Length: 139
Image (cartoon, rainbow, N blue to C red):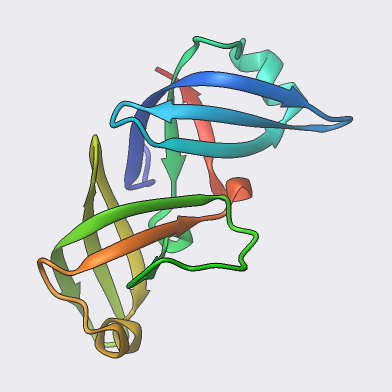
């Protein structure tokens, strides 16, 4: 199956914490970082997710925010440090490729944000992704 989602990151489930309707699933990415996904219990069951399950974390480029340094005081669980490898700007938006340990992410942000943050190839950034914006697929 082909998807329009740009970001596919392989990893392994390290824990599943079930709530009444939703669950948080912790995934150790192949690069060693930890990512949290908040998905429905139905999805956990449908995918057969348990500790040790191989998965791919899927994140739309529009759901990846970038910061130029550590950020405190946020509820965003997923904070992946990386390095900008490419910036492609259009009239209003930009596509920023970021290398993280074990893979690459694409962030779709405004052209104005690229300018304000001074982003260019080689810039150090932190990719910020809300756990509710991470989908999981069997690997």
